[in-house]
Image: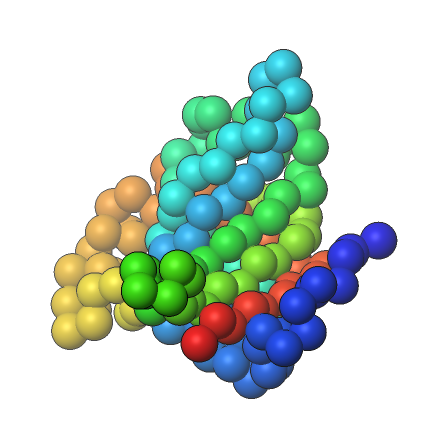
Length: 154
């Protein structure tokens, strides 16, 4: 079902795939929107328990698209550098394919705290207050990964 990387010499090792998903701050989630068009939207994410999580509003363009078709892809890119003299680009990227859906309860709460820990380190008290204040109105989406592939161009 999922295509193998054409350039085997650029295939990323599984350990580096995991590291990039954990460390990169944002990625682009792509889904199918109204009229069958592709829709890519950047989101901050965490990589937790082998899945991608992000927070957003319960309503909106991406949530409408996910509701219609939960199959999504998610792309992260790290350390991109254009090499004009070589007519090439150096980069590391990971693409994930999976199903996106809303999580609630303990899983949602854990994800919100991990998001706060990743993006607001040192401000844990502020994160806790914000979760108490708006957590019920904040949506958390989980991308359950079916396939992931990394590519590194040196």
